[in-house]
Image 1 (cartoon, rainbow, N blue to C red):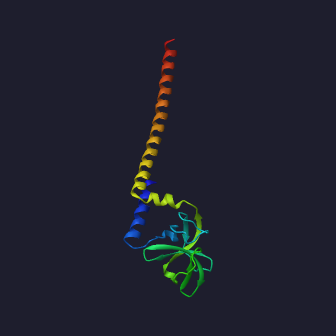
Image 2 (cartoon, helix red, strand yellow):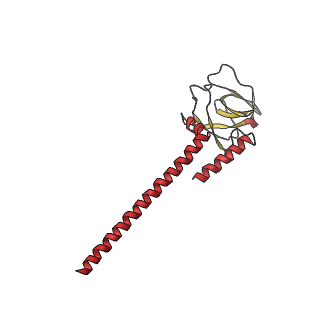
Image 3 (cartoon, rainbow, N blue to C red):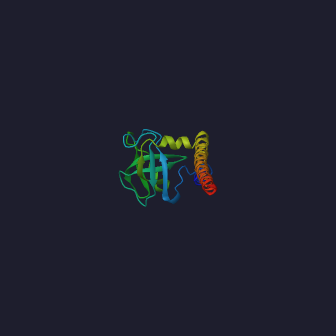
Length: 169
């Protein structure tokens, strides 16, 4: 499990830092964290948003698009041939038109407040804590298994002593 998480983290790091892709979309699905209140009340800061690639978008879809090296989560207010017009629900002004090639996908799931945990795990302290927790859980599992083995061994010894005592009689 740890190897899978480490591999995924390595992939995401490389995609973001080396390839300039602020939100990699393996298998057409990605995740973003809401960092501002521009979509209040629909989305709040630290909400986790799951995004899926789409062939087309409609008015009222909430989409995630890449603007330079950061992601924007806003609602579609109009659709053109190869552009979308978006605007944050809490904003008074529409965004600049967004080329469809910059759109990562449409929001399919919102998980309130989980983004803060995801952001914590992405820090060096969070990675260390996750690794330490994995080691601790492995140690607990090992100790439980060792205790079960010791208990079974003691039961066998007790039974052997009992049988030897019966044999002497």
